[in-house]
Image 1 (cartoon, rainbow, N blue to C red):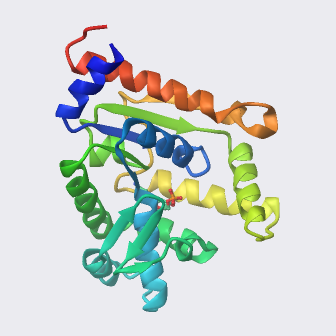
Image 2: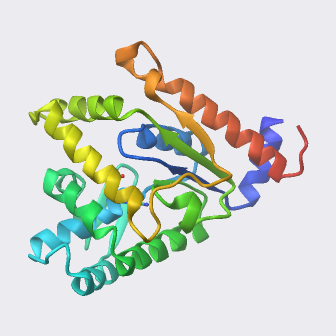
Length: 242
Ligand code: DC
């Protein structure tokens, strides 16, 4: 059965959309899924971050909608597995600073920036099968995606994961400061007028809160669940032969 589904999927371009707030585990699941399925992994948050980085370097105010849209349209963004290039420069590490993290969320409210990013994302999805993660993939970028997952986790757990990530990089930040920043970003991402973070009505809701190492859980379970869901939906798509 599995081989039948895989063979059928190979003939067709497939879109797997994974949305949710930061720190929910989207990247971990999306990367593993893409690897497993042989699809291209696309981190759309990294694209908004790249444009924010360019703005920082050009001293463009994040609130300047017109200039920000121009930068978004002119940016050449290439996503290789695990790396991101902006205008032919590797910016994989540079887009992870606190300033760029905040800036990405701020410029993501600008409709012109979103239009430019969405166009680039659709272009990729028209060429190859993808596992694409972000905030609006199942709702706006690919409302007809074959598989949609909304991945969530409690604020406390998401803050904890981010703290560990930052500490691993040698960055010390207090839990209360990080909680404040994440709340602010969540609020902005989910209340903006254009394409706010939201669960698509036909997305499967998964909560990864209890699956962290700290709580003795295993994010791999989620990955297997998502994979199972993928094959179920894909099976139905290719003719309901289960
Ligand atoms: O996933 P991330 O934290 O790297 O995303 C950075 C910012 O980009 C996030 O605060 C919201 C924005 N974003 C968005 O608006 N739409 C997407 N599809 C992906 C990210």
